[in-house]
Image (cartoon, rainbow, N blue to C red; front, side):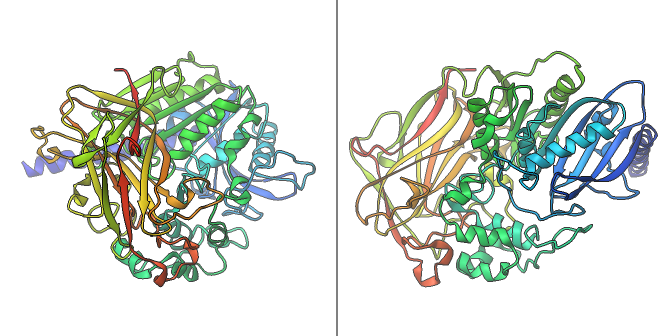
Length: 615
């Protein structure tokens, strides 16, 4: 029997390899690869790789990705498109173009993180990522044979930022843009800060250890070199380091963006200039946009939701939204998107997106192929595990509904008469963001079982009775806490949790506490992100903040849980709980704080749910 299985397995792999070679051979027979430096208006040359159809019988659209992560393979190598869904674009006859952005890999010039958009260009010296895109499109249209005069741009994560910049280029040939998990605001919610709180393991891991922030003085085939990662347990490592100030010497003087972050702890003009959402009114009405993101994207869920809303509010183009049950970029890779961690979604959501949403979007706008059937918003609801289409987002009928924290750690849709709960937040013993030992930040923490903190005295837990009907949420979640603290600053983490019942067919899910949405608010920013304000010890203060949108159904028989805590480590740097510059704080600045969370008719702490009727 083992021999038969082995022979079948070998045959399968042989057929698979043969199929890949067939696809590879087909692409090489029907395409040519060209590499070219393209001059920008200021004379800088950007390295561009083009895969051009040899078929001259019809005109071909151009689809482009601009990236800081290399447009390789360079030279004789071809991108392995036959291993991904990108082969579908080759089969459709697209000209496929990748480009190293200014200052990265083989492109000339100086790289600048989230380079600000300049809406008032006055000379050829005034350049940004939008102008680089414009100049590139102009060159491609004039130099790629048999193109049909229509261009699309897409990209995920940092390339999603460049896709958004492409939409601002204003080029009339740019007909379709899809920013996916786009970087939009590194202070308010993407990657390295949420509501001003520094996501230290992501920031340090990306810029310093990962080497992305390392300087590149001249064009190179390689990216930046990071520093060795001398740990397997991130929690212990960052706790031992003590504070962000101790990490800065490891970053050295050469990592520009790390230095910039340390110099701009508050939301100031420097950060505001790097928020591309404020310029979406410059998008041409003839450029269709499709924002794509994941409900459980640990890096850039903020970017997808808020770029969509900004385009909808300011632009006059055809704008669409797709949200699936995905971690960061999960929809575009090899994953089928049928699960995340222990949470199952009952279908191959990644395949559904690519075949039914993304590819038809570009085919319609760039090839005039097929009907335009894409809904305004196509969103997957976890819990229910179904896709739904909407004419607007949030959906019609969405009603903000307060769910109040109450006595005996209960949640209710009615206010408590009086009450408060307290805990001591100790920076020397911060609450971990997930269970177990991890070297790097996990993606699965976004849906992790929260029972690992159930015995901690510095986490407040509130819970509804068992639900007697489904409750569906669609839209932004708002945490509204009334608190008094014993110090002059503190962080507030609020988590919305779906508590599964017992009796599941999969016994590992019995009483599972699935994180649905969690986020943090740095208390000093409760009134203004640009003008932080100290707490007055013992005085009641309101801390109110909005999290990213959710799309989730709490099923009948489940319970809704809310947890409140003041650390989330090492996901987020520790707050010394004193009103000092956290990036320059020393070990002695970190002190304990007694946190009181009030829940009464006068001080009705709650979480405001975006409740919608049954879908």
